[in-house]
Length: 312
Image 1 (cartoon, rainbow, N blue to C red):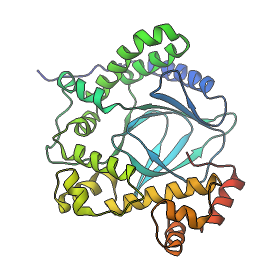
Image 2: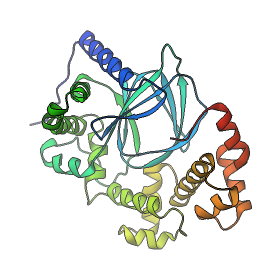
Image 3: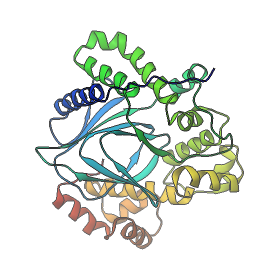
């Protein structure tokens, strides 16, 4: 029998739940920036004004925009992140994120739920996610309409943040429902691929994890392919399909983002930052940094500090 997930057809009820969740998140994020919550996988973000593009790393998770708007760039692809939709990230991806709409009166507010892939894997036999082509690798970011069956467990989990005893008992049950709704929803096949050990998407996720841990080391494609049981050409093809970039480009993004973080934090000078992230030539580092961020390192960092921005 075909599985058909629950759909709430009352638009006014959906609107009321979105408004309640928005009010709760606005209280949890009284100031600009990212805020953790009593449930470790949940966090929220607030911005009171538009921002310049910020390069950051999106980890596997669910994002819900409640007010305002962001633009997310993954390689050449652009995603407009607005209320009424959710953003699903199935693998670590370096992106450029820019707040487009935000003010003190109407801040940009979003809620993020970080995935535990082991829990997703445990639910796969029960969830029966929609089928997908067995050999297809799908992009690591996608957007879908936010519907009641997904909004409901999110709202109930956020409500429990003020009740620690209830949260400890009911939180895991609601979290399980949330994952189930994702797996049986529009993006279920995308999420299931990453959690299925035999899939090429899972192999790419392992390659991404290795690159994140060893971004400052020389990259040898043949060795990386061997680590994840793929051929070099297959690794290139599926890595690009999921992340919109090659493994070498991905490593470069990680290196430059980490160098920018070091420089913004005042931890070292340009040459030292270049060396720490794996560059042997400071001049090559400065050229690639300028291409990535639109200005040489010191000018870029000065611009960000003057604008009051910080890398997430």
